[in-house]
Length: 526
Image 1 (tube, rainbow, N blue to C red):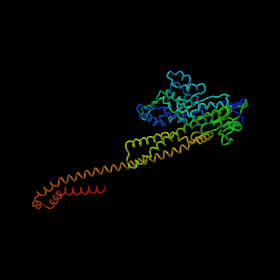
Image 2 (image 1 turned 180 degrees about the horizontal axis):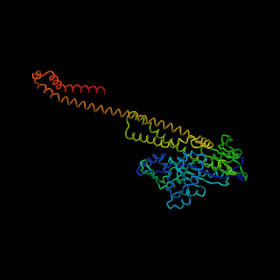
Image 3 (image 1 turned 90 degrees about the vertical axis):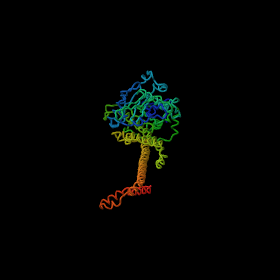
Image 4 (image 1 turned 60 degrees about the horizontal axis):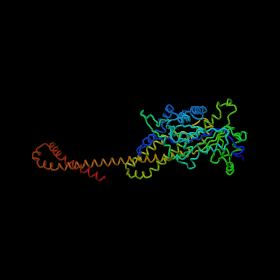
């Protein structure tokens, strides 16, 4: 087996892109008063909505240095649409302007953020891009070009920025890619003016204050995706074609997608101790015989030599253009997984709050704190439904792309990322949450109906007692009136007048009897 180092190492030229997904919620300013999370609540309410997407579309007009719109990225997405790698709906609803960090402008900023030494140290080697998504994430890309560089050096440089997985989780101590991603996002937040201003449903402004210094503290450890795009591999000046690299150098091809095992110095010996490489490990997704495309859950390796005659391409575009577009699609799916995981985590946390609420709902013993938690639960479910329709759309690769080759790659990526399994967990959580809220609503309705009925009963009983008392008060007057009747004069009257006068005299007594019977009946029902 040839060595990665030594007199004749395997050397390559190409690009390495490290993609990290940062939740913008980390930068939404917390309230000055303890427990004041109004800005966070507003952010959760608008993320994923068309209002947030509209803000992202006009953001380039408000962006300040050191970030500039990356027009090359705009051209790449447009070309990918022309090549049918993305459908028009996907481009318009999911792909928003990308910003490039201008290093010279960054260094000239008079109010540059403190503690950017780690980011500045990497400027000679890495370039930076940031794309904001409609669901409230920042996609940070670290891009590095390699020319005729040993594979061992490429792997070592990738590993150099992977140190966060070694336990350096605190911002101040870390020099990892996640530290850099937080620094880049903080610089973008500052370039946005420290605030996002959206337009509400009725035209009112919605202000979301941002704080770039909230990057400090514990670093996130979301999925980081590595994309390696090689256009030339050789050893000792002899070119290694993709098909040979995938067969005779299969361990190194696989090792580039498993960067933890490809380290400079002794990497070849480590490879000899691993199990034999099987065709399943090297499942080539490339539609062309002369290219190599390997996909794992955290990396993408593309080896596509430039065409000798680009003008002869019958499709009107080159394979490197196709692969750059596909790489953007894979990064988008990685972001999709992060969004699904966010919903899964939030819905699981919401589920954990209903265990003791169920008993209290059954007993009708809800206090103000319980009702507050129930309102928060309903709002959390509502916020999840803001994001769900958009992320669910991308679960079917054929809805993303018209191109069968791209559909095949996206389907394999989704399988490797396990997005469908995460989506199933989310669906289960959301179904249980919706079921609980429906049960609570029906129980609350019954409870309120019962309370209303009891209130009506109490009111009726009160009125009945008042009528009885009123009737009892009138009894002495009735007795007195009866004693003063001149019966001889009454007997001399015509029969009809006699009946009328007796009825009028007996009417209060009749009302008293009816009221008493009504009260007794209501008491028996209770």
